[in-house]
Image (cartoon, rainbow, N blue to C red; front, top):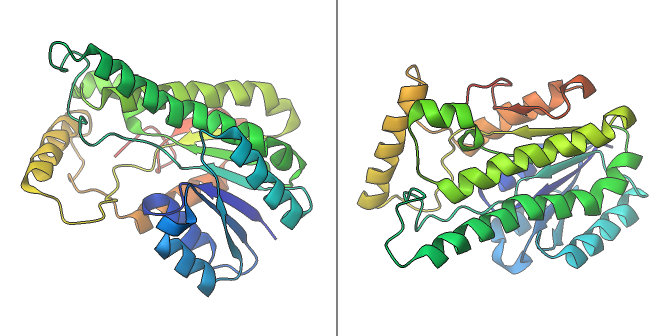
Amino acid sequence: MPSYLITGASRGIGLEFVRQLSKYPSNRVFALVRNKHTAPQLLALSTQHPNVRVLQADVVDYASLKAAAAEVASATGGTLDYLINNAALIDQERHMLALDGYPEGQEALLEEDIHKHIQVNVIGVIHTINAFLPLVRAGSTKKVISISSGLGDHASTVVSGYAFSAPYSISKAALNLAVAKYAAQYKDEGVLFAAISPGLVNTAQKPPSPEELEVFAQMVERFKVAAPGWDGRPLEPEQSVKMVLAVIDRLTIKDTGAFLSHHGNKEWL
């Protein structure tokens, strides 16, 4: 029975990972959330699929992650086949500010934004990997996947001229290198680490406001500079996750340390 642990499983891409993986009774799916009581869709899914188990932990709280890892170990006999680091932070309020776009006198806010994105998107993933790595090393598949973003690719950033989402983008670029560091350490042991961008995905929980639509239009305009053949439409979670799972399935130890898109290459859209 392949075992999977997905962080950030309460909504969006994380919830969709759980939904698709739980369709196969042979899979054991552990869904990690910060608060079970704020994840009604996930809890409903777990009642429909007995192969889903909801765990509570915060990726920036190492003690809670160790406790969750102990729960998984108890259920599986000490192994885990797939770890999917999906939990992430992106600040929508200041999403369209460049690094020099913060108002005069708000330099401390810029620092705070960078720190909190690094804390969740880099350190949180490192904590999660460290907590569950002993189980992965004891597993049969040995795959650790971290959900990244094409915004963390420096080449496409320069080509597109997309200077916004800076704290988030910086954190994802740092995450990609953290993945490479683990890959360098555990390649000889056969543990695969990879960073995968799911593409631009529609994870909105409600209809967008006019202001949000304007921001999205600006993003599309810049992204099309780097990807002129792109149709400008975001993927739905179902399609994105299906493509990402296909990439994960194809990965071998020769690919360890890679930063790839949902296409399995460097096409981010």
